[in-house]
Length: 261
Ligand SMILES: Nc1ncnc2c1ncn2[C@@H]1O[C@H](COP(=O)(O)OP(=O)(O)OP(=O)(O)O)[C@@H](O)[C@H]1O
Image 1: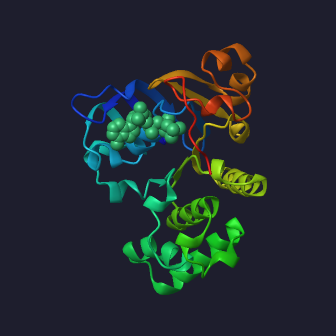
Image 2 (image 1 turned 135 degrees about the vertical axis):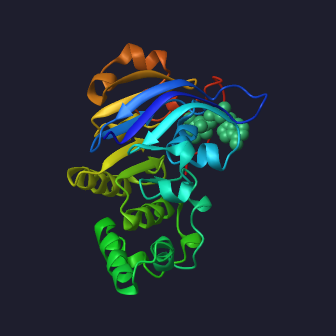
């Protein structure tokens, strides 16, 4: 069974707005390490919401086509069920952190699936060790930096142990050491058989992945080996992407910069 199958996915947020995703088709095998990139506004986060069922269940809008995660049609399964298959770390971590301590944040989802208290404590220890963030155990997530918040959201997701991990711009808020930490964690998880999908606009941070999908104005402009795409200067220039940050901060409309943390 494939981890992800996307067939003819087209989506718009409202009845009159433009199609944000246009006839997107791709498959991800179990255990693959895939990156998705593209300029600001090309539809990366929207695609993430389609992969974990937030679209169509919680965002409204108009979706056509099909998305399957581990054989489950996202349109036919509730988001809470899909969360056991695909864990998403959101681009904006404030939308998914709401507990007074890191420990309680990680415990929350585990309590929801009725794990016994002993196992909850064990999983919290394991994920904090795994990410090297035991020192943040009693911290209030709201008081942490953007990068640390992403790590806590990732820890909460890892504690649930979903087979597919989906990270939306998690690296961009981290310093060099933080990026290295996440990269090593993802490589270790990949070796353990997890399917990892990393969404990043910064091409340097995804060079470690095996396969790269480039989105351009809501369509898949390229789906190839990462090293091959990153070596294709003319293609990157045509997509206005480049290794390094400045160019990829320009929006799809061609003007303006957005802030990263
Ligand atoms: N809730 C919404 N309602 C209407 N339009 C939206 C909504 N969210 C996003 N969009 C639009 O959909 C398009 C794709 O946005 P999306 O956030 O998926 O792009 P992105 O590639 O993730 O961008 P970024 O790299 O800046 O996060 C953009 O034109 C955006 O303005």
